Amino acid sequence: MPIRAILADDERLMREQLRARLAEVWPELEIVAEAKNGLEAVELTKEHKPDLCLLDIRMPGLTGVEAAKQIAQLEETDDWRIPEIVFITAYDQYAVEAFEQGVADYVLKPAERERLQLTAERIKKRLAARDSDDAAGATPAQPIQQLLHSLSAKLQPGGVPRYLEWIQATVGQEIRMIPVAEVLFFISDEKYTRVQTEQIEALIRKPIKELVDELDPHLFWQIHRSTLVNVKAITGIGRDFRGRQLVSVKGVNEKLEVSRSYTHLFKGM
Image (cartoon, rainbow, N blue to C red):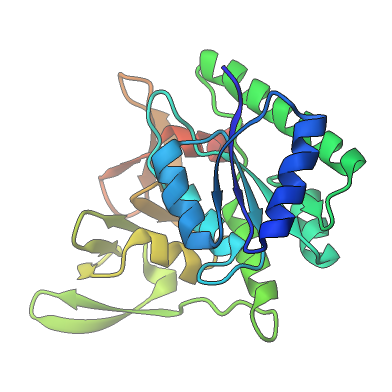
């Protein structure tokens, strides 16, 4: 099957140039859609389910980083995985960080043939490795949340992210202020997000995809599209009869399921 891609850049000439250069170095790549902004990129990813998204970092509406965050939250299926991300940027400081962390590739504007060739080879290898690991029942994906947090901070004034320290939540008929450090995990359903501490269970209306952006990624790991867990609260990792990873958390009997996209977090444990 051909590798399918979505290209997002708010400058038409840049999209045309990148498409032409990609056709030279990666003729089998199929660009299934083009987006003029980050919101379009997210919607087109939902519609076309590509293998690869090439996202300009600075776009109106949603930046490429914000679009990547939303794309990383999409639900995977048996025949589709979250796409690989390549950032398109004129800013070296963003590109270097993305490259050094190894969870996303980058292309500097204007796109040079040699650099695109290198990117194409890297993406092919990643997709091939992902397919082989899937066949073996493993997940080679690397955590991208920390990179996206860092890049978001660089796009903000001051360049330093501010994380939530308190959660205002409903407990029975009361509104309580809960220190984030005391939260064991967050689990969302369609309407509410459950906030669990060792002493109380509370509810908030903020979805996981927003909490991911507001919580320190070194303290809270996303282990499922609907679950964030406090790393310091994890007491063990096990498996159920179906082979799914389950996280044990101190102070509660409940075990938290780890989805396929996040099993890499516990390799070696």
